[in-house]
Length: 133
Image 1 (cartoon, rainbow, N blue to C red):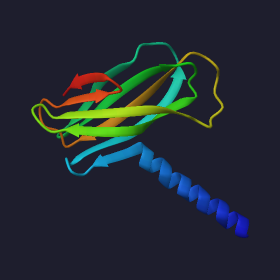
Image 2: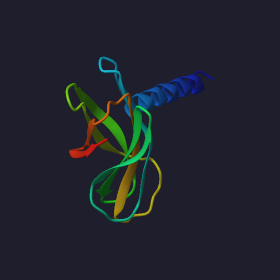
Image 3: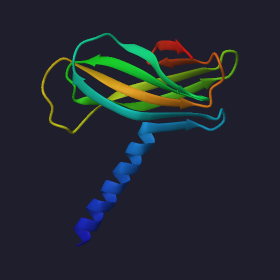
C-alpha cells in the first residue's frame, strides 16, 4: 500500500513538472505563452513559424522543426519579453523525447503556441524564427 502511494505521489509530481514546462507566464509584462499541443510525425521540411489564428489580444502560432525521427515534442525552455515598439516576445523551445513507441523515419515536430496580451505590431521569435502579428 505504501509503495502505491509513493508511486502515485511521484506520478503527480511528474505531472506538475510537465505542466510547468508546457506553460510559462511572464507576469511583469502580462504576457502568457503556453503550448496547446506538440507532436512528431513522419515528414520532411524546413524550420518554420507561422500565424495560425488571431483571437483579440491573443494569437496562435505554429512552429515546425525537422528531427531525425518523430519521437519528440517541444517544451518551453525560456520566454523573454522586451518592452518597446514593437513589443518583442522571444520563445526558446527544446525537444523532449516522448515515451511513445514510434516508427523510425525522418520527422517533423509540430507545435501550436498560444501567446497573449499582445499589442498590434508585436514581433514573436520562436527558436530564432521571427513573425510579426
